[in-house]
Image (tube, rainbow, N blue to C red):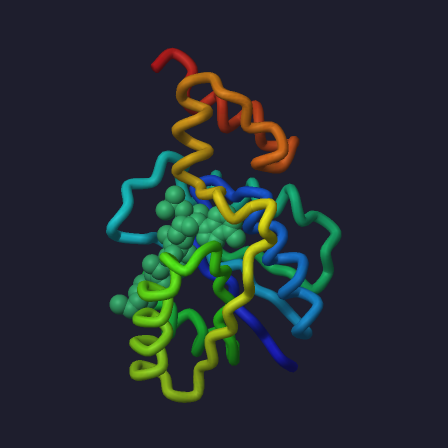
Length: 160
Ligand code: COA
């Protein structure tokens, strides 16, 4: 069984992430969306919120599982017998950081592979922090995040 892992902080999940999830799920037997803590960022949404947003959007998708996790990605991969990390590249500027992460993960766990997928050009400008910024000023986030989470994203910034 070929298990891929798509890791990220998903704070919150965007349509760009979902595009990668859809395409990656076709390439493996099982895709685990790993909602990880990125220690360099202070999340706006709790890990439970971030995971449940993705679960709600992906309900009924048999070969996709959403698992929250804190710690090293390689430990998560080992625990779940996963072979491959999937990462989306939006622009050349993503490459240097992702290249470093891929090599570091390979050093820690030599049998690991990292598969880079080009983000759909429609979403190449998108990031979770851009969505948060827009939502915090009441800007339009339709078409950027799944419809069923829109109200809860705005809700985070009400009364602030
Ligand atoms: N569509 C839209 N946005 C996308 C995207 C896509 N296809 N691909 C990436 N992005 C956005 C993300 O939302 C994120 O936005 P933000 O910075 O506004 O939050 C940004 O691009 C960067 O994404 P990424 O590099 O994947 O960062 P991340 O914070 O989502 O995830 C982890 C990073 C959690 C996977 C990484 O820190 C990790 O593996 N941590 C575990 C600890 C570990 O093992 N460290 C490595 C060894 S020291």
